[in-house]
Image (cartoon, rainbow, N blue to C red; front, side):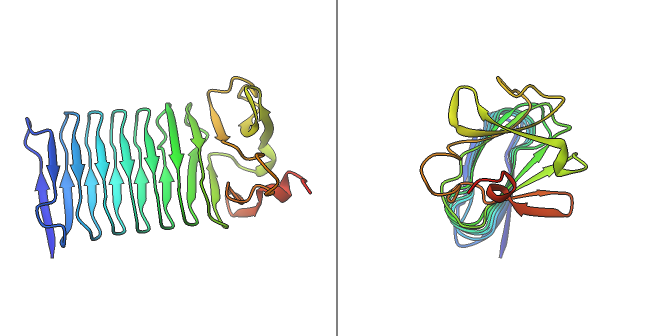
Amino acid sequence: MMGYYSLTSTQVSWTASNPSESWSIYGNNLDNYIVGGNLDDYIDGGDGNDYLDGNPGNDLLNGGAGNDTLLGWTGNDNLLGGSGDDWLEGEAGNDTLNGGASGFRDVLAGGDGNDTYIHYYNDTGLSWIADASGTSDKLVINDVSSIYDLRFALDSSNSNNLVIYTDADAANGISDGVVIQGYFNGAGHGSGEVEYIQVGSYTTSLWGYLGLP
């Protein structure tokens, strides 16, 4: 069964009354706290600084406007931050994390599983990737015609971080681009971080493209 609920204009929080159902849940313009059920849910936070918790299941969470926190938990989840400074956390499962073309700073934490991170270079914001594990995680770059348009550098504030930018961006103190946290930490050849990069139809090993042994 599929349940449906739309928060009233003054309602702040909502938790699935029957967690054994799938739910479609719609927030409002307030700072909402919404918790879905144990099956496949759709949660749209609307405006406001929202906290969206999908619980188990293959969930689709849309933060909308505002500085949102999205938690997928178990399942293969699709997390879309929208506009604002968002925190997206996939946890277990093969998740897709998309901060949105928002012009803000988003933190994308995939957790366990083989996750996909999406970044838009027409966006003037920053995607900060904190990837915990997985052997086939992928970064998908949009709005760039070729991988040769990208530049790669060490983060000036932390040499374990990889910065990916274009000539239109600043390599150091970057505010527009991608930072992969802890990419060079340890001897794991980038494993447990992001293994692949895709630009258009071209996909390759990120570690191999960087020419690292």
